[in-house]
Length: 299
Image (cartoon, rainbow, N blue to C red; front, side):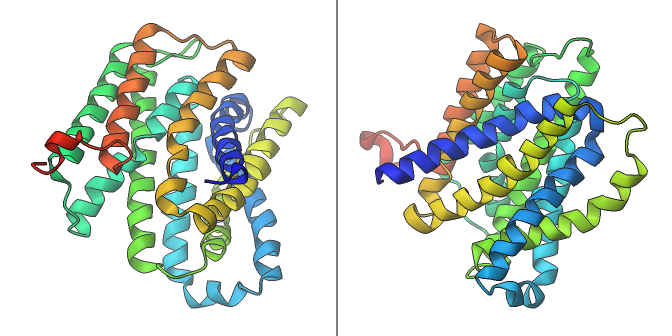
């Protein structure tokens, strides 16, 4: 990769890692539904003009049904689930659970697209699940005042969000291959906005959020969603999807770093071990970590 591509990859990891920090800051003040709605509305406001400048609006009309499903499963539902989880668990743990999305993607591909998993990738799936169990055993970084039950629900929400991401990636591959990535990104944020706006208005908090809450919500929307999508699809164009998806490994590291620096979150040895195990398992499952050369042929 060129130096510019490496810089884009690291910046994208920092932005997506920061999204968990901003959710932790804004979710208690806005609530999960309003925060998820603000995130997609702001991203749509940024991406739709870019799409119009590239004369890609006609693509939305042609593929609106499939793009709407992507908006539901790749934005509206996971953003809402992660926002709920942010009320109970720490940013670094949420980001690490988000890194299991490729694991779910591999399972969906095997069941739906009949893509073989193989022994090596299957071991990666099991190792990833072991990492999740380690995090649960360590009570997954409880936020102050949260109960173990709330934490257990939060981890289920994070895994549910990751499962939606895994489904959406395979749906895009099956139904939207060849469609301009910016059109899919902008259209999915528009459809997610349509789905979430009314429920968000219905559940809007009675007290006006603080300036810091607004700042976190706007950063989450414009930087961690809108700008991040532009970077991500630029990386796909420059280095390919396989290399671009390696940003998954950088996101938890940045999320943990931002949590330590700005929220005073703890990092226990057990939590760190769980994060490492999840990342190793994910790397094996998506092929980023290859089988040893001596055994690769047999596997």
